[in-house]
Length: 194
Image (tube, rainbow, N blue to C red):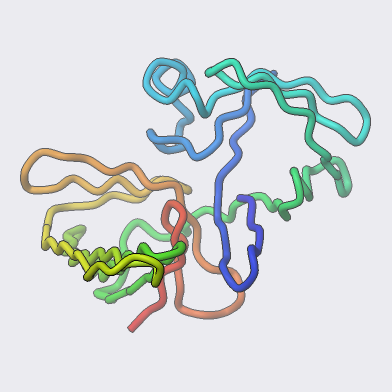
């Protein structure tokens, strides 16, 4: 897991390494990492890399090349391109214990709020609200959208698979929040227990 602060905003991303490949924000989970599927359906986030001292030379699937600064502590990646890295702690449970979590993400004039109920029977429900507002320079109103969904979920290590009643699936890479609080990280969002 990689974290970085931009002002007062926490950015969460995932870097998963396999041989000379790295996948940024895997779409299909990490237990197991489905490298062939990522290369087919998430190619812009799959790269070939080569370590070169305190740098990593990276060529992304969309052709972009980067040379990023990296740091290692005891042989484990601890910093990548200005963000702090840690080995993700897997979920030590097979189900959450009837808990409601909420998460809020905001960037500029766009805001997303998600409330998740995660049941010990492997069922979940979610409510999402998104809003976009004018930036102050333009006379505009606010646009918003909301949704409510439900389904089942399973946990395998750092992968939580949400299967919606309409057949959709969301494979979220995640981990328990490790500062002694009842919080979890799913995808790019921190969820706090209500």
